[in-house]
Length: 435
Image (cartoon, rainbow, N blue to C red; front, side, top):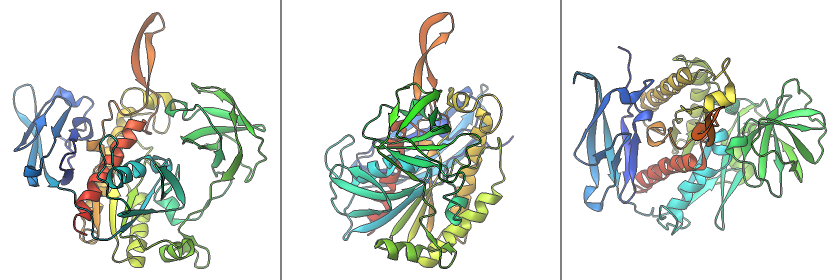
């Protein structure tokens, strides 16, 4: 029997923070609930969809957790174990600089902002620790958290290879447009809009900026733009988008034209950033379109180049590779990708995501990288059944009863981004307690 359980080797927990492990992000099966999922641990509570543990101060330490998949005859089909490491937050003795890097899951700044809020601000839900000015998030992309502005590097559509080359801007460059206001939501992602005769596909949505990728046949490097995008198809909110400005997506922020290669020292110098103590990388749903794929040769080629160069330029920096969450399992794939072509196979895509995460974890635990790399398992801490975008739709064309159907294949809802922020926050507490 092929492997079905994909527990990471360890998970970080924080005193006072509700920790959940969702079985959909652990069990690779069409229906994981076909099995009895037996959880054994000295702490926590195993509910039907997830394991929950709300640690108290007395729980500081490390606990083993075992999951058994049990069939209808009471036979154990497969078992796996992990370690739960409970930390009590402590403010670092001096400020720590952090660089976060990613694709469209990072472009909006949501998970980086939530991790920052929980660590540095007070109040909110969950309540923040209030360790003001203890972390400094670097980057050219900006996101406001209250009165603070944090940085990061997040570019929709990018993957490991994109950060190792300088292919943008080009005939396939996306465009960021500035808006005063808009009413677009995650349900409008992948909708098609027209501007000056060209089709643009809405890819990333933030409060004041929208990102469009090019539609079919659109190859002008710098096409002429007018100040209104009009709806063509697939949007829920179809009002015109009035823009106040636009920029074509810039090239690789880490590229140094003088040496024709990625150069992190140069990136720090020209932008007057501090050398990062930690680098968090969340890549990549891009490039994973082959169903049931287990061959990540291309990702390996560029991930190792990227990580090696980071380590060469910043040998004291710690690198944390965040895995990807599981795709939508209740219609988001169908809504975005149809019934044929890349990403259209829902369960095949889910398999690829599990295998990619395992490849990334193995890379981080390899002899070469384990001294300065760690893997953070997002998928098991992400509720893929409820924290992907959904909308109420009639159960069929002849019945007005409504059901919730997924509307986006791989981009989370805001609550999903917050869960990724929780993973970031838990890692910050674990790492910075040592500083």
